[in-house]
Image (tube, rainbow, N blue to C red; front, side, top):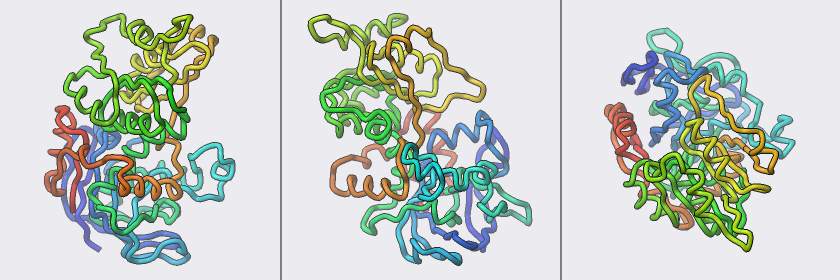
Length: 375
């Protein structure tokens, strides 16, 4: 069938909105009509050419919401008419990783997903007979897409597509990093580096966890108001602290009779390896945990003095906030619908598919938290 899509034809070039062909679902697959999709920094990272696993031509997008319109043979957990969110991190519930309960990184379809293909090793997208790659197993920059059954979360039908699509990546990643990966406890102190979409959701997660002191760090003073809106208690612009940013943060978090400073938890949401080091070194000796969320450029490496780790600090990474998509995403949708978390203020711009490149422009200019394409 013919569908409308924004095609990434090559690294560094604008997306081309055009008509492409989509084959129907095969065994254990579903076709979803995408109603809305967010534009994420990860999409921009791939489009820029910085992603070592980036494939072209492809249909990007991984932060969507829509309705199941067809199911392939063998599908049992979904039916036509179900409202769903595509998952770039699937949950098969049967692979060794899923059964371990130690990670959310399901391996059932990792090999083919990384090749831009469906589990049978082929693509459902093409243009004039030429193959188009899938992206992160989702390809939500098309108004219809095909996904494996295990990479789709069924959600409640009264949730607005143009808001809950954000749960497909940004919301879940930020909140999950706090609740699943760091397991922040009430009364903790935390520092969040980078107050974009992910950082603001980390702050939301810290508020949910009842953290006490929540420090936001960003080069843009306009982010102070945003952070405070979602629960931040203190703001620091690194320009004001200069080379003394880490000592400044450590001093802010001093407490107790011995006046030893350092945050219980820090979160890097920037993808900058220098900031990742600062985040670790701003942790409390003995127990501080620093979580890396931001995606660094290809070939980048992190470094610190071994002393920082020997004295009890821990570096951790997280993907999709440690969430198990089919299990956890519907719960997060419920949190939104029940007013426990906010999404609406972060959707700063909406646009039709024809204007999708404007969404990337807004991102580059730092003028948006999240732009959403509405089909």
